[in-house]
Length: 296
Ligand SMILES: C[C@H](Nc1nc(-c2c[nH]c3ncc(Cl)cc23)ncc1F)C(=O)NCC(F)(F)F
Image 1 (cartoon, rainbow, N blue to C red):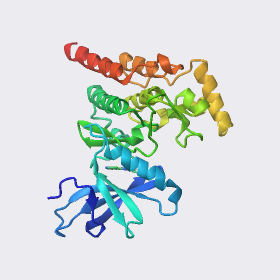
Image 2 (cartoon, rainbow, N blue to C red):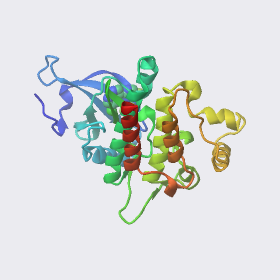
Image 3 (cartoon, protein in one colour):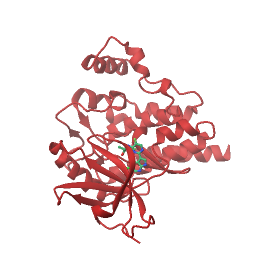
Image 4 (cartoon, helix red, strand yellow):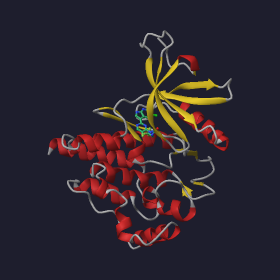
């Protein structure tokens, strides 16, 4: 039995199938099977795209970040695997069999209750509260980056874009526009490339929207593109979106979304970052709402 040791020998890591493409790497399902009898554990292995050495520094940072996080609501680091004679390294993580939250919600939308959606929301909130306690800003919080461990447990994953907030600052400013779709970004991240716990709160509001619209494609945040009109491209899409947000336009409440949950979303979408709730206060709001529902 292999406890979660830090180094995996490549010769025992058996490739099974591709899981998906991430920010700058791809993730594969493998079995770590040193006994060679198929009793080894299934793991998710993230490999850096070989030709992008420039990302090696980012990948090393991702490994350093995820290996320092210990929380039930964050995908677990298992270790690393050197290959090509320690020239290249892969990140070994726990494998979550139910896959991404988007696929799960679309498949199970008929049988999932709003109560279960709130449970998922409170778990994501607790995971984000933990990240905030470690001064880690995720920068890419979206339903596509949430994994499902079981029918009643979800975990935050994909730490490829995270930044650590310096102790003397409230936010992190990156030098280039983000690569993610702008609909998950807070206004200050779009206009000034500023990222903070408060911009993660904005994205959490969008994740709430995704969860309560069951990641229903025709209702997903691209909705505002129709609002903006297909003619706008690139930079001007951002400026259109910013002007809509300044004019207090927000994504509409998804069908079947309880009013208390929609008011949480709109609280996360306060234009000024300092007016947004903290993850701990959001956690309390969700708990109190679940409590009321139970008593109601
Ligand atoms: C690029 C990889 N993409 C995918 N991964 C998985 C997956 C299932 N089960 C998994 N167990 C552990 C991991 Cl790390 C991934 C998966 N399923 C579909 C994907 F498209 C990924 O990391 N996505 C980010 C995040 F993990 F947050 F969903």
